[in-house]
Amino acid sequence: MASRTQKLVRAFKTASSVVYALSILSADNFYLETLSGALVVAICLVMLVATTDQPRPLAERLSNSRYEFVYSFRGRVIMDVIASLFLFAFGGLGFVLATIMLGIVLGIFICGMQLPELIHEMFLEPGTSPECDESASYSRT
Image (tube, rainbow, N blue to C red; front, side, top):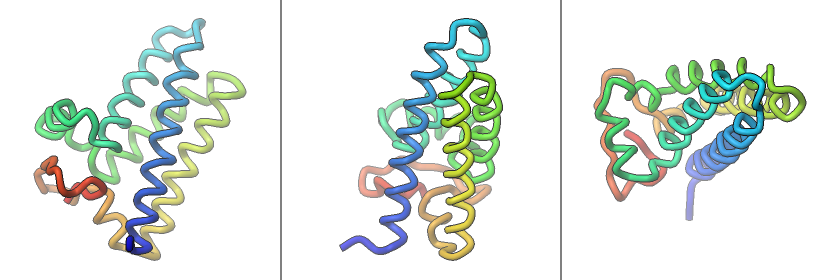
């Protein structure tokens, strides 16, 4: 039986994955600002790979590169704030997705204050090397 922390980790990762996927679709349909749409797609794809650890070869390559910061809480916040700022400019759907994205980050922060092990299960500690192992599907440490 999964503990409360594991259930929260699974819920936050699922919600994040859905928001990233919807943000990619939202940015793809935004033709007026092609560069902004491309940046949102790129950020959301990277964060989707970092959140789900799928596909495994791409996740390993990402975790062993200079972009490993996306596996930390600080990197997650930075990437989500940047994507949200662009999404706010995309109209109604983008505004809703940006608000949800920032709400998820705020929810992780608040739950992390109540359950510190949640942050440890979801994100890397600064200075540790990320490893993608088969046994830890919801843990990066």
